[in-house]
Length: 116
Length: 112
Image (tube, rainbow over all chains, first blue to last red; front, side, top):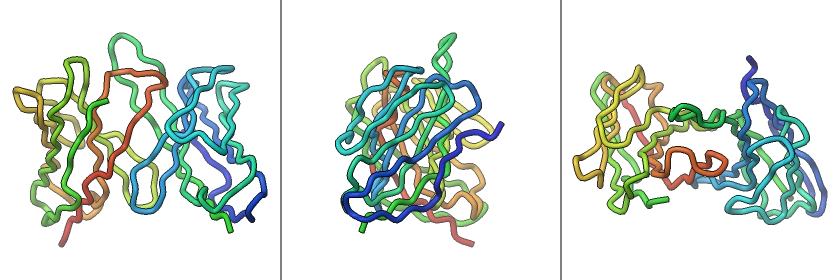
């Protein structure tokens, strides 16, 4: 298994540009989520999905859109990039619970985004 | 999810045990204690979790006080590769989307 993959690893945007951060997993995980991490801070949840066709907002959803058309992919779209969105973006996935077990989240390597 | 309090930073000598405390005095009965760590520039990594009993796995041990208001993560023989930020998270076993709420964590520096 490749685990959780993210592309690109680095990206520089100008204010107002749009782009899509890609996230994919090959473990058939139902749960997928996007977090952002600003310098010196913990991760904050942007959006999450509990399965294909189902998405919901997290703590900091403004300025971002997501969709989940397949189990494998969960892209994050920046509609009109702003300097405040300069951050490191992490995608994570996990299985649904079953039999009372905890299914830990597996995180991707991150995308480092700079908005000028 | 209950709030957690952790020291901002700690040092540990290589080969010694690293004991990372976490205070969660408002924890409720259905909330578990989870530990993740984040090595520089990488995505967080799951370490261990527990409800009320002490837990041990190949990475660490988790000691939860009887009143469940605090816990300690123990790395029995810290190595330089254990230098990371350690996050203590308290939440129900499987909330919506299996979400995690990260605080500031403890920055552990393992020194030679």
